[in-house]
Image 1 (cartoon, rainbow, N blue to C red):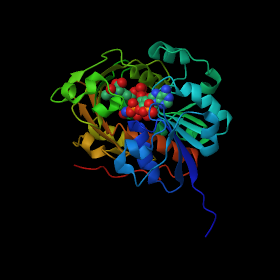
Image 2 (image 1 turned 30 degrees about the vertical axis):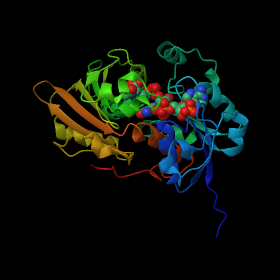
Image 3 (image 1 turned 120 degrees about the vertical axis):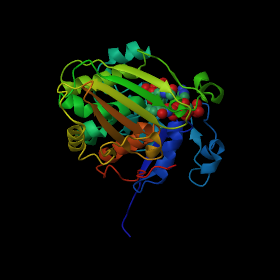
Image 4 (image 1 turned 90 degrees about the vertical axis):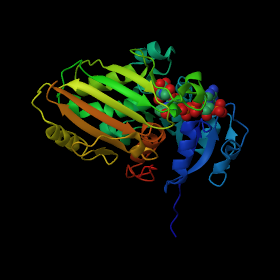
Length: 352
Ligand SMILES: NC(=O)C1=CN([C@@H]2O[C@H](COP(=O)(O)OP(=O)(O)OC[C@H]3O[C@@H](n4cnc5c(N)ncnc54)[C@H](OP(=O)(O)O)[C@@H]3O)[C@@H](O)[C@H]2O)C=CC1
Ligand SMILES: CC(=O)N[C@@H](CCC(=O)OP(=O)(O)O)C(=O)O
């Protein structure tokens, strides 16, 4: 036998939905092992006290946060915390030699003044933030392989950007015409409950929220502008749907060339994602459902062109907790470590 050693992993925010998904995915990954769990109100409890069904998978105790102790135990640290906490922890962990993968919004923005105005928090860690790479591998694969710090995208931006990127990169749509109509399951709101995600509020109901002012708007616009090479604005409208997991993002935009037909557009999308194993572009006339992606790290994209209006409609379906969060974070880890980006990640949805 050789001296095979699994890379030790820390998860901060282990008791939350992102944390529990990370525990599940890491326990199935052949190159890593869980070595440290951190939290606040859950500190002092065993992970299996919070999630008894995972008692055979993880019995680590959740610890209060001490960067020295975290760095002694873990080489890669996932921060799965509410916004505004990672920016205090990541600089210290990076100084101690850890690779850091942040699931919150703290390291998603190139321009921290945009973060501060949308998230209401001032930032002192500009130098650290300047080293962060936006963790969407389908767009920034090479930069992720070189990075020590990843700012993983939000769940809505993941679905929406995968639908929009080929159009913007190839200049196929009229600037300013993109409308994103997105629907999310309630787990997108996290485990630390809010009133709108209570069963009694969300069940048997469907509604929009944060219309024209959701904080994922500037995140989507930042990446769209980078792809297009000029400033892009989008109309983003999120909705809460009575389901637990999944996001369907439907993007409408006017084609520069209204003569482009669906099959040409499908060919363009397939070429754009030819090296992206987690993106599946559907056959003509097939439109994705969130259920297909549920439990997997896949993003399914369906495309239609309407010759009457000259618009393209792109539908993008993901599992918000996997490709929209924990799975994408592991995909980034694989790239940072020089591993195959599909390693240890779920390839098949639960279906039905
Ligand atoms: N849910 C989703 O679909 C997605 C979420 N995200 C982002 O991922 C991050 C985590 O989200 P999610 O898992 O849903 O959130 P949850 O509300 O489910 O979990 C939050 C976690 O943060 C911990 N925590 C809260 N405050 C502190 C603190 N002061 N110190 C240490 N730990 C603390 C909690 O630990 P404890 O119980 O010990 O207090 C808990 O483990 C968020 O930034 C979210 O925006 C990104 C993409 C998708
Ligand atoms: C259904 C639901 O409530 N979804 C969340 C999205 C969570 C997320 O990914 O947001 P950040 O990581 O940017 O905080 C919301 O709309 O706030």
